[in-house]
Image (cartoon, rainbow, N blue to C red; front, side, top):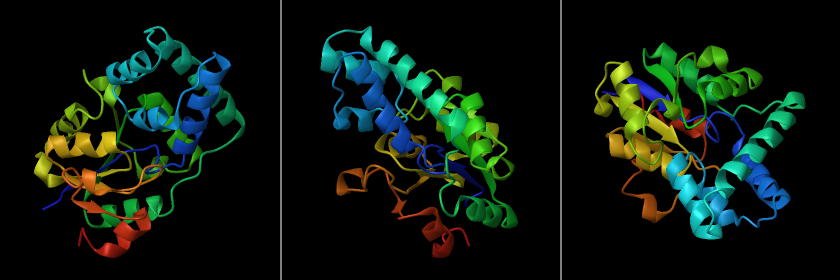
Length: 216
């Protein structure tokens, strides 16, 4: 029986992945590097050590990742001074439905907790998701299972009692590795058969999860 649903934030609850995509590209370009889309997509929800390896493999310099990451953060910070990320359709309704069923919810994100709270505030979702756990709280980020295992421990639940909603390969590998029931709602990367070992169910939207009756 599922007693908690753990949600990734970027690309699942708030429509921010497109900004990460664009600003990774812009930040790299400003510093003189051409960062391909395939690498940008691999960076989503990615452990910092693995992300640094992506840059090292691409450019042969371990100083490029922190420089590009710093500039990307600055670009996004400046953008969100004047703009609000949109909540994903169905996010608030699904949270309300789960609350009515007595199923706990929490956000399990690669983002720092302060930034996650800021984005949820801007999107109007903070009241729906009061609990946030950042992968910065564990030694290894996604796709390693550490952050989901910690979330389960904090909720005093076994992983098999928790479902996870993710949009990226790194996310679903993290949740599945922890032993959670894993639901994929794709954002920038579609579901493909090579993810079948990590994904128990895939849906087109949070609204589809709500209408599926999977938690009835």
